[in-house]
Length: 359
Image 1: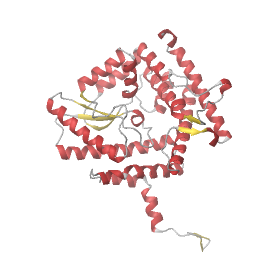
Image 2: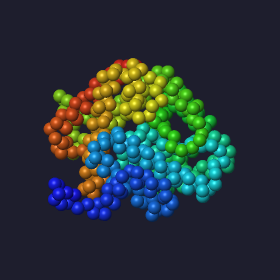
Image 3: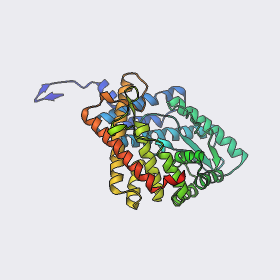
Image 4: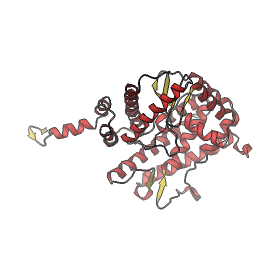
């Protein structure tokens, strides 16, 4: 490096290799050559953290980074499925591999619990055996790559059924919205196809039609309102041991609100930002309300990711909590305003979906 002809620094080969290793395209190319061994998979999680840190440092927001991470995770899953098919032979019937939760919404940034499932067409004993074996192979590969197993068991090893059975499940969640059904609808309605040729139009039709079921929407709204911003008297932020849970108090409420308003609008979008835009366009949610929630969501995602990267740097396990005393005065004000905005729209949702009538 020079400045007006004077040498001011030296870029070494090591510097260039380190920079290359933090590039998402470099990691993408590596994923395409993974051979399925534990050694080849074990490098994924640390490399992903390096990539996320580099993207964050270079000014990408958490929403943009989530899109990049989803693309990388999808590539890993497809590679594992390709390896499984080479090992066990071609699938006996068309299928689709799904992800849901934050990964389904393109909002997972750092590796969290797996949320996946598998749908296949022909309901035969051969298909059941094949996809059970294939699911086990992929799930074990993901665990070796750094994805912890889902504590609730929402993984393809448990959730691999023929299409007809899935259609019955989705219809049941909508038509008989009991607590367990609502919990599972909130999970599976965020699904996204990562791999496979099976058409899921019959399930998409149920999701679109769910917006016409008032009781289903009301129960889904009530479930979303179980997560409340941590606000006390005079709008003060409540802390627990000096910590504030951004997911429970802010991110989850927005995700839930966006889902129910988008379903009411007949939206097929999955990401929270897209759902808010669709809801505003259809008139389910005011334009101002949608924009406020979207901006709040971006801020909370950014704040959480910054905290998680700091925790990783300090050799601590990243979580969803931040220390309030480590925020600047302006950040504390933004956070309080964010929680107040969420609470206001939650109160509006209570009226819109007539939750008082549910008892």
